[in-house]
Length: 194
Image (tube, rainbow, N blue to C red; front, side, top):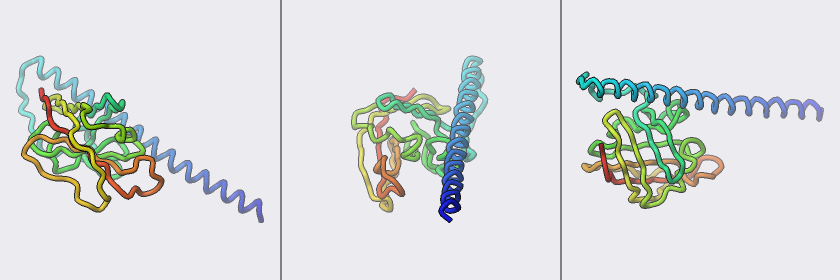
């Protein structure tokens, strides 16, 4: 009987490891696809700019999972491609841009969220005064971190703004096991846009 129970536990453990490994592998592939799509879009934009032709691009609706920005934070070694959406599939691929919020650099609050144990695992090291860079199809923007706060998971934490604001969110504490009880909210003020 002990052998059967032991064998069953090995099978269950193996199945859990396989499931977790598959989820992370899918995320790594989606992240790679998002980075490749971003690089293709950057190359196309460079060609368009070099030809000085106006192709009449419009922002419009962006498909969920489509790469929409690049987020770089040198102080914590973060360089991620941001995808549209904050559902499970999108957050598995990379940080997600909250649909309905503005794009980084535009007037308003641009909200980007990611899992604390994946793409924003180093976000806890971001401090007031650190510089954050974003790139979108509209250009590159530089931000300075002005606020850092922790709020309860169920409390409202996002706000509207007429000025350009960048808000980065993740669950808190970063190293918490299980469903984290709080949210880390980091806000940045636009200091330069190209």
